[in-house]
Amino acid sequence: MLGRITLDTVRVRPVENLIELNGRIAAAADRMADIYAIVGGQVLSVEAELGDRVTKGQTLAIIRSSEVAQFESELIDARSDVRVAQKNLQVQQDLFATKLISERELVLAQQDLAKAEAQLRRVEEVFSIYHFRDGSVYEVKAPISGYLIDRRVNRDVVLPANQNERIFSIAELDEVWVLAEVYESDIARVKEGLPAEITTLSYRDRVFPGTVDKIFNILDPRTRTMRVRVKLQNPETLLKPEMIARVRLTFEEDQRLPAIPGSAIISDNGKQYVMVYQDRRNIATRQVRTLRTTGSSTWITEGLASGEVIISKGQLFIYDALNDR
Image 1 (cartoon, rainbow, N blue to C red):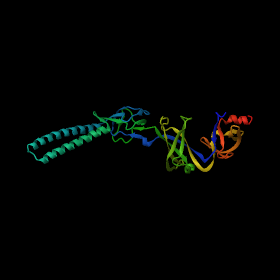
Image 2 (image 1 turned 90 degrees about the horizontal axis):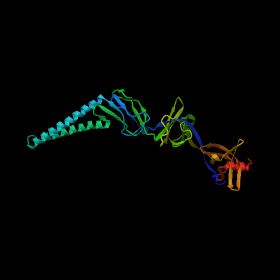
Image 3 (image 1 turned 180 degrees about the vertical axis):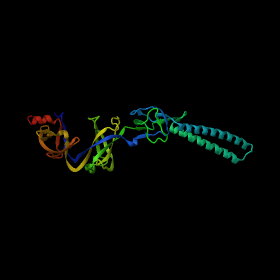
Image 4 (image 1 turned 120 degrees about the horizontal axis):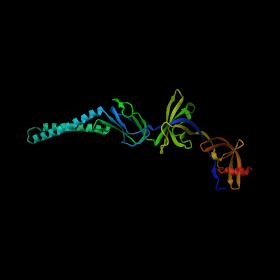
């Protein structure tokens, strides 16, 4: 049976304990973008649905706006001013060549052209940055790639000027946060850097590892809880914002005790046993007392010493044989 069993050595380790918290999945604020309409107007179309994957630069909505028409007028005026300044400079250069004007007048014409070109560049830059198009059209573009997690605009809606509410939110979901609430009695045990295990209703048999990366040192007077943030990787985007999450935080106590895999424990008639292995012909059944099981480890208060070898897998067959089961 040696090929079927697993052996483990008893080692003294700090006793670990658990805190279980309730929380919810949230998009990482440093990996999301809120999008605002910089001009008011009528929404001609909305090109993305809630939950869609969008890429940077993709058009999300198209708005026709009188404010864009004003920028168009500025653009036409700026182009006209540049043409006039260019012609004036050409005339001044010809006059200067025949010594009919002074150099100062030529320099003034050059400055007028430079100012007109600067104004044109400014207006063209506005069109480029805000994705204005001819025909008084404003295209709302995605500033980052990610998932559309909020949409507050529909086709044919008229947005007011000076719109101060976001119309879209995009989040990259390959990394998410869990915001959890810690009860006042557990606050002293929670520290940044603690490992966390996250489970959800959607994936009951899957554990997502994370780390406590921020503690909000403010107590909610209504619930008497303090909020903590757990950061975790989400490469398959299985975790969605607003999912309910169960958070298990593991921390070490000051006490040190012998620890073994929890799978090594045999429970029989209200007592707990382990199989102690010396060699293939010397295997003993020994009763132990346990303090607790945290994760995959169990801490022993009586019955085992550091350095002893126990069977942690396949021991039930041997236990039954040795105890005439």
